[in-house]
Amino acid sequence: MLRRLYKKVSDLAHHRFAGWWLFAVSFAESSFFPFPPDTMLVPMVLTNPKKAWWFATLCTIASVAGGVVGYALGAWLYSSVGHWLVAVYGMAHELDTFREMYAQYGAWIILLKGFTPIPYKLVTIASGLAGYPLFTFIVLSFITRGVRFYLLTWLLVKFGEPIREQMEKHMETMLLLLVVCTVVGFFAFKLLF
Image 1: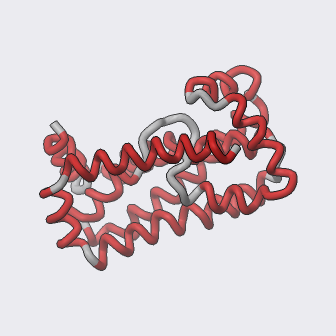
Image 2 (image 1 turned 30 degrees about the horizontal axis):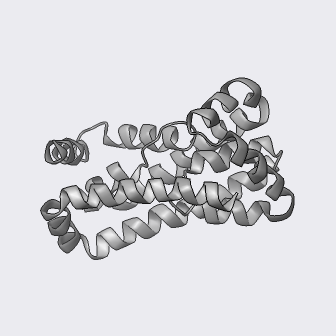
């Protein structure tokens, strides 16, 4: 099943709407979707390295745009949609503590959390909820998400063929590692806040 999914995503890298799919996943992940765009970015860069930097740019722009939607959920719709979304992830209490920390560490929280496995959507909603300045949030989001996606793309371009061989050889293990990183991110968020 995983190999078929990998093949479909790899085929998307050459599809005429590949960029749109990647944009949609990156956008959704920053505001409500549970899966990181890396799951599409990695095979797309490996199968179509000529478009690698374009894919990284799409991920960055879409992630920040989705982050603005997450910010809006926190700022204007928290009492309805935003609260429901945070409750779905079981983090309502932690988010209140997280919001209080913005008064002192807002910029560092955005920069560090946007680069880690802690779900970025929680950062975006909390930023809106805390009333963090929108322009500053956008600038910091471009920095942290850009570093993440461009660094990943650079590694894939530089070491692409060995990475592809290892991915295809150890597909199940790598997917499990991605899931573990995401779960660890959730628990780290709970423990820290």
